[in-house]
Amino acid sequence: MIIKVMQYEYYYNNVPGHGLCRNNLIYTSLISTDKKIFVQWYHNDTEYHQGQNQIVDPSQMEEKWLREVNYLTQMRNAFPELIPKITKIDLEAKKIYLEVDGPDFWEMAGCDVENYSKVLPDWQDQMLEIIKAHKSLGLHKYSMHPSSYFVVNGKLKSINYFFTYRSSEPNISIADVESHIYSSRQHEMRKHLDSLGIDWNTPQPWSVFDTLCWESFRSNYPADFIEKAKCIK
Image (cartoon, rainbow, N blue to C red):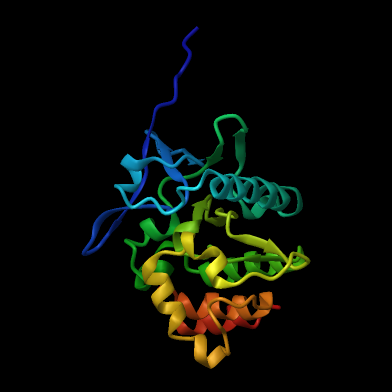
């Protein structure tokens, strides 16, 4: 009997003008050499993050890990068709193994918003359905970067639930979570603070954060999609 041993390697996005960039700033991203299994490894790996580690507090990493497991499995239970198939959750190693069909949606589009429809013509409708599913469960998900999706059998699958909150949770401020918001994203967010009446250090209603989230992603999505996403309550 031949037993196949799966091999894994670091997973990066090849961003035009920047080269290979980490796929996620919280966990360490791994992918099998056959590009069929993606691994979210909640481990603060300096080599992978190239010395730009943002979550260095073990308690914060533990919180993000627990949110990922909690809300990803809730999505699996309620909407299994909207996330990749979970093949294994290794609680000891803090690894989640997901079935995929190659690179993530953003990478497949060459990290260029102009190419999204070339990858998946109805990507907007599919992504809006995922956002509606979140709302139906009372979830507010803020890790909405296009690299947080994979295309499996022609269908978008959502991942990255570490930055997700339930409506019933106490409100938070941006300052409470800025350690895992990338500097360029923080810059985009600050552009909209005044118009939305937001103070960086003051807890805000989840609905306000929802709007701020989408405003900060305007460089990653077409304007018409942003407006549709903002209307989902």
